[in-house]
Image 1 (spheres, rainbow, N blue to C red):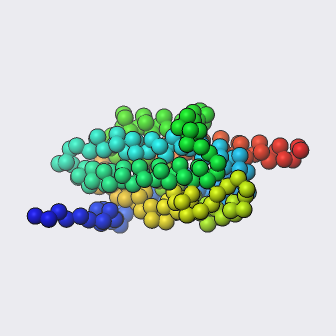
Image 2 (image 1 turned 180 degrees about the horizontal axis):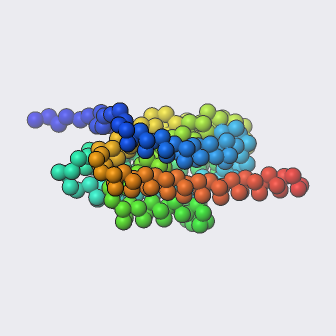
Image 3 (image 1 turned 90 degrees about the vertical axis):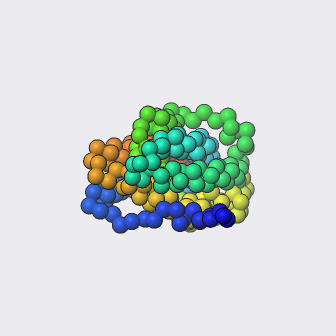
Length: 256
């Protein structure tokens, strides 16, 4: 029999929220908005971010992007009890999207290269503690947490906020086109374009999986909620550190 292949988007149907999942989503939205509305991204989208600050962020966020498929692989290892609702769907979804995230890693390296960051610098980077905390948190939750917590922290929290800010930054990225140290072209903005456009289904699909895995189980629902909230808090901590570099750059300009 010939194999039947389905498009990635056909693998998981998004269903309307019920009472608990709508409340879950609504209560977490303000925490997500703290990321997408962060002044660091406002400056980036407006073309006001210094190149030093841009490079600092691209370089030190690289380990998060590089390890993202591995975090999802740890979650995949938890998707083994196929008699439980949602586990088979979670397994299939994770397998598909680990491949997607591997491709995104290559695109991120191109974006960093467009801002003058070498592959050697990316591979040797050791982020400062405020930026590395999110990596430690995701490793911890994907190692010690359950499948619902893993999806919540990684694929809902991080991808939800990233899709939001990416669309804003993508709209303003061409402000950097004429900078002599920056190369903006189709290849160097592929990562940003992907997350601003077609990649935006991922957090909604992650939420769908959380609903299926934890429906009728208040304990799992609360664990998922806390995992998203903490993931977003660590994300914000990293952004605060990035914005510190931007503020330092502005202070030096004023003092010059």
